[in-house]
Image (cartoon, rainbow, N blue to C red; front, side, top):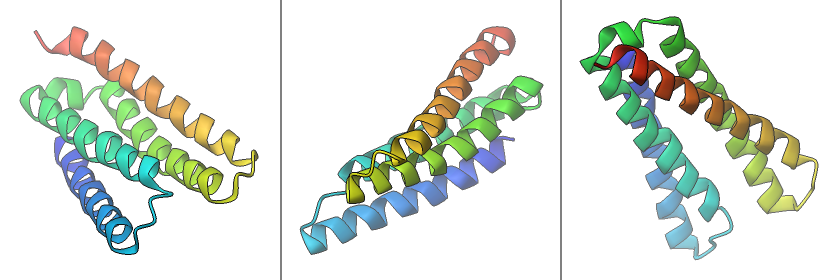
Length: 121
């Protein structure tokens, strides 16, 4: 689990810095919120989760750890696609994807918290 989270977090880091570079070059900052969320939720949060699961393997190998991983991994792309669509088109239909993805990430974060209490003593 730890390796998967850290590898995926590194990919999100690449996506985030490429987005930042593209926005700087183009001087179009429409997707700044997407860039910020990819860096925070994708790179930082997943890296920290991966490090915690490396330090506490029982937490990473638990059902809570696995569920946290999958909620995070499905929630981030869904939320970011919805947010990008909302920012680009202002179509309120994208609120559904943004909200659903955000809910997945929040529930995943709560599971990480419960997992920390349970296994990280």
